[in-house]
Image (cartoon, rainbow, N blue to C red; front, side, top):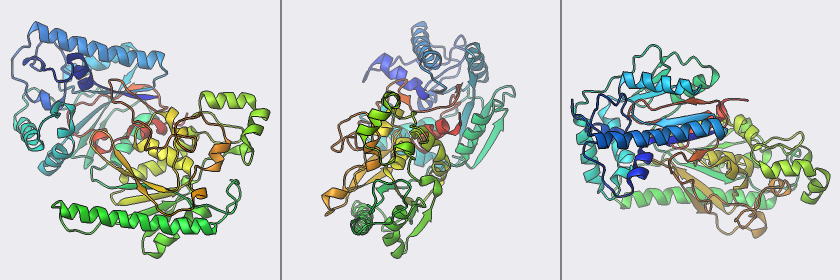
Length: 489
C-alpha cells in the first residue's frame, strides 16, 4: 500500500485554514539541519536570516507529526511505500533524512525535478502551481505574478543532488533527461525510473466506454459478437463521443481560444469480439483502432455462469474472504482485481505516454482498475465502481486531482444499460449506485488530507521530493498506482 505525506498539508492543518504563518517560518536556521516546505515559499528564504525560536518549534512540531504518521503507516498499517512530498534543498539535510529513515529500516529514494526551460516553467505555474491551496482566493493573474517573481529570485541555499552515497533520480525539463545515482534496492526503483521516463505534461483527454451487448452475455469463455442492440449501442456511443468533442472545440473558440483542429483520437480495445466490434463504427469513420490483449476482462474462474445463491451455498468460505477484501481476493481459477491491475501495467505505462486523446473500449472490470488508477481511488472502492452503458466517462489531467465527467449516450434500450452480469454474479459489497454498485460520478473522491491513503502493493522505500519542480503527480495525477502495481509479489 502507498500513501502520500505532503508536508504542506501538515503545515496548513497545523496552522489552520485562512490563518497566516509567522513571517520568519521559512527563514534558514543553522540549528535546523534540513528545511522542508513548499517550493514556492522556500524561494522567500533570506540568506543568513535565522528563524525565531517560536517558528523553529512550530516547524519541528509539524515535521514530527508528518514523520510519526509515516512510521505508523509503514509499521502498523501494512504500508509499503511512503511518498514524502517536501523540499529537501540542503545536502546535509538529505543525508540526515536518509539516516533517520534508515534507523527505522526504511530505504530512501530522492527525486529532484529541475527545469531550465522558461516555457515549461510558465505553463506549469499557470496550470498547476496557482491551484495550490496556498493561493485560494487569489486571482489567477496575481497568483502567477507572485509565483513567477519568487522563481526569478536567486536561491542561495539550494544544493543540487550530488551525494554519491544516496539513492536519487534527477529529472530535467519534465522528462527530457534523467540522471540516476545508486538506486540499488532492486526491482521497484528500476520501475520508478521506467515510469518517470514515460511521463509528460501535455494535456489530453481519456475516455472510457463499455463494450456493447452480445447474444451470450453470461459467458466469459464464449467470444460472442455483438447483438443487434450491441451494434446500435456502438453507433450511438461513437456519435455521442464525436459530437461531444466537436462541441467542446466550438465552446473553446467561443471563450476566445484558438480555432484549431481537435487532437487526434485513438481507440484501444481488447482482442475479444465484443470490444473490437464496438469500435468498428469509429474505425469506419477513419479513426485508428488498436487491439490490446491486456485489456481483456477479469477472469471469473469457476464462478462463470454461477448464480450468487449457488456461489454462496457452495463456497461460503470464499465468499467471506471476498467480502472482506474484494480487491485482493480471487475465487478458484479466477483473477483478483489486483491480478488484473498487474496485468494492466503495460497499458498504464503506454497510457501515460500517450499525447493524443484516447478512447478505451473494455469490460467494466478493466475500466474499474484504469479509472481507479487515474482518479487515485482507494483499492477497496475499485471493485464497487459501475460504468452503465448510457454514458462515456471523460478524464482530463488537472493539477492536484484529475477531473472526470460523464458524456450521456441518448436513446439506448434500458435493458442494456446496467452493470456487467459477471460482476453482479460474483458477490461484491453493496453500495449506493442504482445498479447495486457505486458509479464513478457518485463516488466521492478521496479527501487530500495529510497522509490520505492510496491503493497499492510495493515494498517500503520512502521517496521524498528533493526540490520544488514538477513532480510525477503534477505531470499526471494518479501516478502512484503504477508504482504500486509495478512490484509483482
